[in-house]
Length: 456
Image: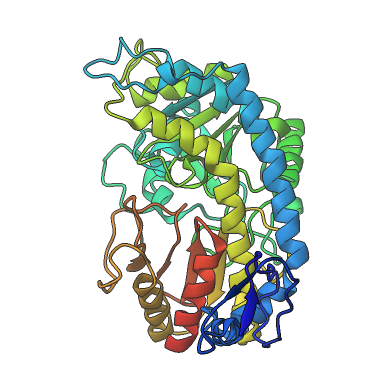
């Protein structure tokens, strides 16, 4: 048998149907008759790593994936320009010890670049923030003083903020309630978004800070678009010009081409082991917004008088922060593609999903309502088995600091707890929904979903 030695054609479709490949004549090479490129090609198609449900979903999501690629290009352009304007150089990657006074300009360059990326006056990006909750707490304490009132605009906040506010298990540990800060919240509308009429009635003169949670958290609700956040900010500022607005930006960074400071948010905060760390940052968080309030949040993180000028960043962490931030638009794009794929496949099997299939995304979280404890456990176990790290372990639900219910986590990630890498989790309570997030490449979700479908 004779075959061509020129390159084989590309196969853009993931279809499982075998077809006879055609080759053009270039130079030829004699190979044994027992070797058949046709048989190898047919075998490749028959042994495709994706199950048929995933293949069908991928083939139907071309336009959605293409739109995500365009978003990635826009956000990458913004990040690249910010890095160039901050004159980022390799000398910024060095770490420091002790007080951090001798840090070689890396903190300043990183802060300047990130502030430009999100459209803020100022920013602090620090390894000393050990979670998004920590960064959000520093931002809230920057705004609020005894006798002030905090208003949650978009329903109850994420579980880990309940103890910060004092809604649950305050016990005199320094919650906002302990410091005499009052709290109210505006329930969500029936469609899972902001109840605009209720918001108008809730904004009172005594409110000092309005908290807007961008992502869904552990609630069966949709995430908020930056346009909706901007509308809420505008409404709040008209009703109470002295009210400051804080946006919990976790899971939302780079999902759109604009960020909340661009539409009037006074502060935003989040974690670096979520979107903006690009799966590279090993720890940390950020606060960004108006300069005055960023400095107040920095004083809460460190101490009054120290602010943004102290804090060591040992080892190779600064390089990881810069590199992760540069990679973030691409990693977020892959995670968004993963949410489209999860929604498409699980909805085809009759499960309720949030967001709905093919609906524009505003965060990287895809919720699936599984309806029973057993299916929730099976889903998470399947994800863990399909992970590159700890695939041999079995996730066990249990009590986790900051959470009201037992929670199960599946996160076979290179950075512990990194939700920018592929992971899922969920509280063991009705309606037994699993919350999927992250993914360095959508194809891993394609593999995971095959394991999930076989398990539930």
